[in-house]
Length: 436
Image (cartoon, rainbow, N blue to C red; front, side, top):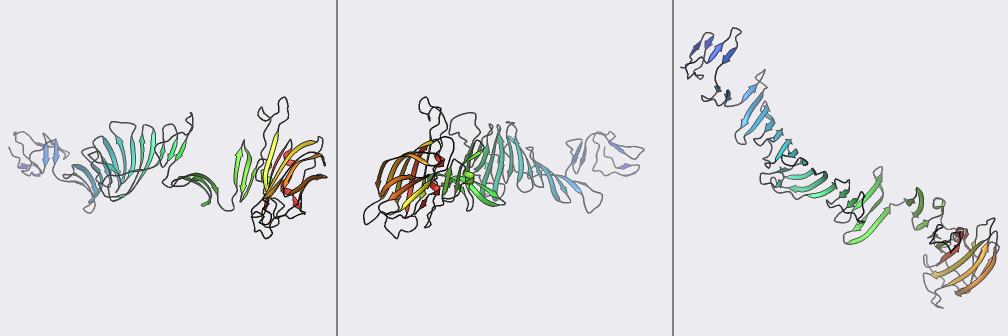
């Protein structure tokens, strides 16, 4: 029967006991007990309590929390005074501050704000997505949430992939650009997801860089670029190691400096840290020791049965313009104890040939021993514009019988290439030579 009245007030006919049983029991403490299912705004409750409409929780009329079901999406929403704060879709995705997109069925996602999301796979436990402006729609298409750029950090089977995408239209397909990859072996790829080892050897940790116009690693100090390593440009396979103006380029091996490049000057081996430019330069031509190489004692650098190492030094220095009668003086470091034998080969070339005589340069070959002076000197051969080579004290003297055309500009003067074989070739001080 329908209940129309109770002792403590009127009861609306909206609550009906259709079985003629007691529907509501009022207790002495003024609480009420309902038997059966109760419907609010419905006469056919589906559950113990069935509410059709929003539920509001409030201590005042001005602000309240409300719980509602959005019939257009099926989402359960929680709002604060009309502003949605939380939503759960029928598929299990959760939105904070937004109703989440309809994600693919094997993805559970948490969307935060307009585009942030964290998602996991219900089938593959090794996959996770941390994304901006991204979702996977019900057709398994990776899509934009809104019209804007997109980015993602994706984990799959132990591999970490960082992706970016240019601006696209809401709900359209995303074409990713792989920004960086760290595979499950610890190898790193920048601009590529395919990390290869050019040496085909293991174990190695590799860093691959790929770019449309070549990949570059730059090094900065205080925000200012000091140097870089990379590929020069698209279609050009040249590799570049560079330093900006005022910076020197150093190469270390075995925790010691082995090579230094400063401006146009290169020094290999020896005391590279205290190296200074050549002292013999008269017309803007820097005298530069271009190369100095030593070979340690070993089976490939010894004469059979000898315990002495065979050592060679070679280099190039600028001599500038010479004329008939000019003498080039090359000093040697004074040494003690043992006489050191030297075999020396010298070649001279000018940046512009002598138009009057056609002389391009000259050469000299000689041998001697050095201690505090040069002894046992022998001239093997001279030619071109070199008249003779001799020894005086601790100096090697090169005399020229023909000069070069006068009026040569910078870098058209004479360069000397030298090759020295001996135990202590560094005592041949080509960079300290003088002209007179």
